[in-house]
Length: 365
Image (cartoon, rainbow, N blue to C red; front, top):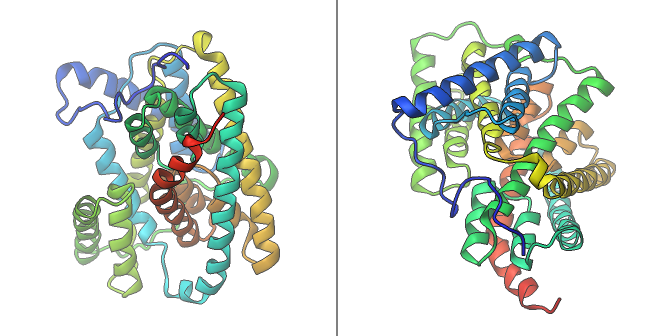
């Protein structure tokens, strides 16, 4: 069984930083400055999703270099709400015509999730000294917090599980946009996205209401990624009903992406590469394995349904719900499809993991 790894959150609970004090302000400001610099560099390089990707890369390097950076929970939640409203604006009445094809795609996604999780589980069992509980919950491509909490409750190493999921998300976020940039020449920047120019006070009121009401809905219903899912659902309803066709301004979205990107990098604060190089390498290898499964099953779905292959790959990619949806938005693919599939995956894993684990973990070695 491995030693505890220096990756938060401890005991499945994020560090409480609801009020930014003097001691918490300096790491936060440093993280934002570093992340913003990364966003400018990646925007200059014309990378897709430049502000989130640049902030993610620069803050991750800073964390591994030992710089004292940090992210405030409330700030990140506020920015995630903005992302949810933006994603909800991508839903249109045309998606009703796609639901039949999505049913097939969601069925294939279920098989892909099972296959990828199984391969990842045996990968971790083969190349780490982690116990079965830790390997199981590290292999499930679900939410980082959810899997860490569940695994910890069943006796697994919370830090090891958190490390595996943080590296999975980081690997996917870095791999897919770069692939599209190098192979397909994608250069979309969030500030270049078309936004309706007639945002009057009514539009602003509706967008703000979507965010506030959605955040409450997500919290009350305890939805996975509630601060993004709730606003996304309420925003989707408002846009489908024709109450507004407006979106949050690009500058605000760019700021939100910097915060989300920095949040990914800050997860690695305190992680020593020289001491954990094997665990890091194995976790990245598991992420690559899951990406391979996603591409293979996306090809099957494309052959069966004719759905756009780029949208299908993003829908199956084992990244975070927020990150994959934003990448889909930046690349101009069907964000409603991408978001719906990732929500389905999260619900599927959260609902089935506790029951499946009883069968897997009670079997012999």
